[in-house]
Image 1: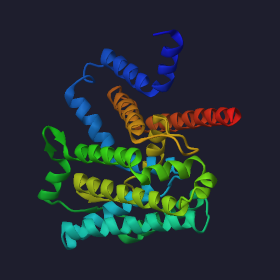
Image 2 (image 1 turned 180 degrees about the vertical axis):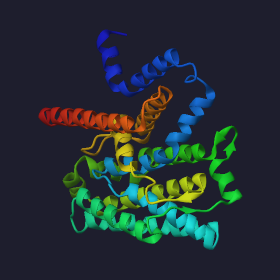
Image 3 (image 1 turned 120 degrees about the vertical axis):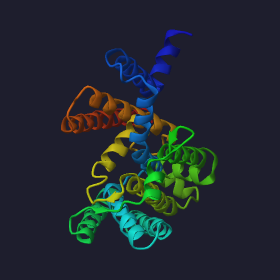
Length: 316
């Protein structure tokens, strides 16, 4: 294998290489890091946000993104906890799924039909959802201790937490849809060049609306799992969700300009974030400084993505 081929492989797999290096460093400096229990903890830590990240992957590939999913996650935990307490779990799940689909549809219509920018539309939705959550709960958390729900949220199957199985299932479904279906091809085409896609007869408004609905549905799944795991609903839950999932998607290699990326790339991005912040916790770094680092990483990755996008445009 010549030097050019090795260099190209390193460029194309820089996230995986970075992840391996990070794991290797932590394995040397912290004995408690390189254990099966700790890797299970990392997967559990990234699973709930990771489910949303696959919905965000579709949205970003389609040339859009959503700032409202964090507030929506908080609302889901509140609705699920309150309705499960008042009625039953089945009704709570249906209400949460329906509510998130409606919110996703509204965001999609605002962007695809009203022609609002995704930034403005989803920021407005986020503010409205946060206000709804605070009014619904009077700013207080809702607790509901239910043994069956708690066992589900914190249980394991074949040695892996239930939430990790949901995370894996969402990954596989997203990979299949993007790689092997007409819908996936439409998402890539719409994000790659919307005018070319429109001239090719692709209903770009449908795909743009659909990705917001899908993102809403993945947020519903994540919110229900979080509420079941914590036996509580709170408007503060998910406050860093949007930033975290966008960071994971972009770190993985999905371009903010649209038309490029995939679910497997997002998995690597989520693992990098999960391993990094697990390492910081083991090393005793305070949570506030972890957020500073998360923001710095996001700025750096977006800057690099913008630079590569400019280079691609110059080649064209």
